[in-house]
Image (cartoon, rainbow, N blue to C red; front, top):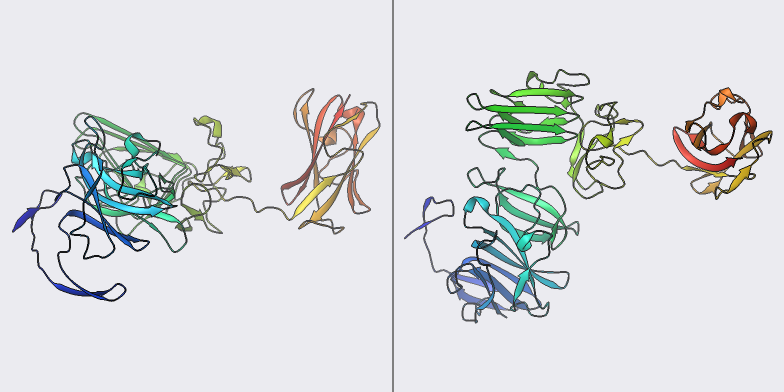
Length: 493
């Protein structure tokens, strides 16, 4: 007999009845096919087999479930129609494919693919059981933050056939068939993405992509009297492959417009294709890019590095909300980004790297190239400000006072120590007069060369000239190996 695949290609299908022997509490004999359905999926939970499917006894664009205590009992068991697609217009109204039933965190979820009537718009969706104790009862669209329970797969591309599983690391993941584009007109591949829960994809689902027609990572093409403008900054593109432009394919396509601007970005080739392929478009380097090939000859601006290995770690969990490629020790990308980087030039401000809160975008006074910022190693030291400056910042002194003694004790690894390493006292006026760092050499001697700065009785002691400083609020920091390890606040009136 003949049938059609989803891509519309004619394929030959052959159904054969065979005998199998399986051990489920004892040998059982059954004949294939066990169950006639479309997109069947079977899961086994608490002694019961559950099969989700579409068509063949299940109404069009509905999802049905059968259950039985044996595999052979599924075919004769009653069918439960647990969900039907909404009426038009809806993003999941048609072509409901490949439903899978999963028991996660004491509830039941069905993952499936659907579209709005156009195959190019196929996306992933999730349903949740109305009653966690009734896996064959009704299901409702999951609360994912998107309409109709659509999963937030970060690519925003054509996607079908989702499967969810717990990996050996204990974390939840989703795999699915995808393309590198918003439509189904390109080669399919398998994508995987981490999930923070059954309703949320929490990381990027792109790594090691292959784009047959060009642009394994990014495909930017202007067509039909149009113009494609692309700006890539503070990004890491690694391991993507294509016949042309494994990283970025930028093409004006017979005189149309295609403009690529790229800055502070790491490019590392995959198995095939250059990092940048530009047949007819325009490529402008904004500087501070790092490419392990010649960057197509376009990376010639200030700070650009070509033919240089960025020394990236594997795509993995390095903390934060998404998987990242860490910069390994000795990476030429570290502290090599734009020295004039301003986080407030972005909306919202780019104060963190790709991982989000807790991972500063600028460390050591200069940004790293790419999406990942190497964080400062926490100092083993902690300084504790001593009297006469109160630790709670409530100290107020007269400006006519001769000096304000700044005293710090030190702990190392949480244990008090008298082995005090070289340190610097830094002073900042935070209110009153001109705010900012104070050059103490104007007053009573440089804080950087040890004048009026001594170690006495397991304490750092530094005498500040109160009258020379004047009225204001001050913060005094003790700095060891370039890191502030303790601070004190006081006022002069």
